Amino acid sequence: MDEAPGADGTIPSVARDSGLVATGSGAKGQRLAYVDIYGSVVELINDGTWTGFRRLVTEDGIPAAGSGQLAATSAAGPVADGPVVYYLDAEYHVVRLEWSDEGPGRWTHRTASDAPAGSPASALAALATGTHHCAYYVSGWHIIEVSWDAELTQGRTDLTSWVKGADEPNTAPYALSSLAAEGYGSDGRRVFYPSQTGDLIALVLDIHLHRVGGEWLSADLSTDTDLPAVARRTPLAVIPAAGPRVYYLSEEDPWR
Image (spheres, rainbow, N blue to C red):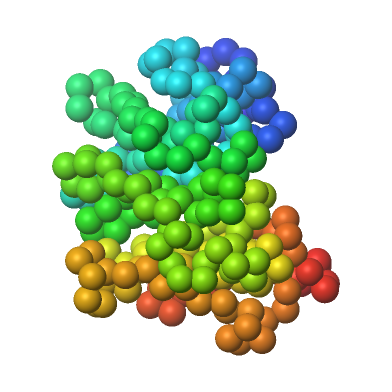
């Protein structure tokens, strides 16, 4: 990257535990974000060619990262005008960075300081629907959702406490559980993670049930479909669809 045409100066060194997320498309250009060795979120900018970078903590007063984990959504619409990047700050609260094209364009931030602190090495996942942008992380043995609506009103939900039986060992996450999330329909949401016993768990917001805003339900996909056990440190990937596809590494055969 230091040798990319148009890059101005030496790109900051990447933290050993840094994640890497990509946002944006088309005329707005592409952005890569990661955490550097000083806890700054670094944005690499591509508007046809790599034109430079920004250390957001230094330049925009954004809180430093407490871990290198990142999540992002690129969907624009009623909730956000541009890409959104999430990370955990030094106190392990979710920070939401949103790109705005107003004026010269800049990142703004909001910190979910009233939501439970995440586990220090918690994974992050994020999704966007027609009505909400949401981030997910692990706090102890609980999955937490922090959400923002079109007015940027923040909400928070302890999904593990909400769902009956989700705090049992075969359905509860552990501190290092990986996460994947996807939105569907107007406000449907699904969150996937491995449990303490290696089962693949799905938390699903069913918006058609009687509660206002829908109701979260839990499904043990390993038990229901006789899936191989999930490797404890597996990465997770999900393809959004009416019937989503989820990918993970198997405990019995880590190459599959």
